[in-house]
Picture 1: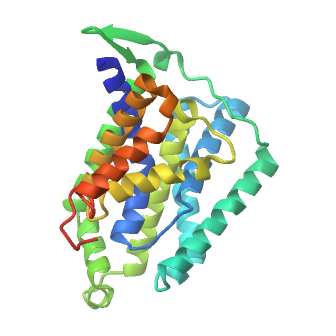
Picture 2: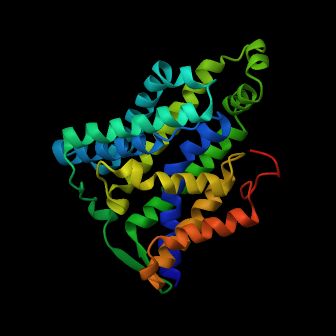
Length: 286
């Protein structure tokens, strides 16, 4: 039971890192970016290419995946996304889902449709027993790394000048500009950060989740569930939601495998019935 709980926490942590970028763009920037999974896929393929073709260490591939996808996000934000901030959510959805299918076609053409594999470093392989709990090295690495990222992100959004400027830009962009805040740059940096986190999550998830051209569609619903259940008013809600959903999914597939992924949807329905505005959102809030 404790081993399942541990594996569920690791899975939930990974889901949060994958989805928190969407929480930033949707909750803080009010932009529906369904192409978020494409950035995660890009981070995964950056890791696969660097490791399998160039022999670069997995540990160096993680920051590389973050930087490459963050740069790609910044470029796309400056050239494409910035023109859609003022349009309806439907237009944003249609645009971003179009990017998803374009990315799938491009990856399938250049990399093929097969499942991609990587060899983790020896230190991250295997398991050990701790107080009767089977602890996987790689899952422990994911938990520690994602926990550090979560704390750093929360501190950055609540205790830094950048976080204050971002909240001001979202609340009232015109007033923020009047105060000398470069709203355009703040949004570009936020979008790049969200894209980079997605890429990092994709890199971490290659071994655990698998990677193929359909990755953005396969896990889009999971990202949406995390953000919907957790709410978009902060990152605390999506973090707790990701943990609960990760544990429920792993436990459900272990104890009642015949139900498959139904468990995670059942948990989502119950949570939304009890907290329709998200776990930590006030009634009527976003």
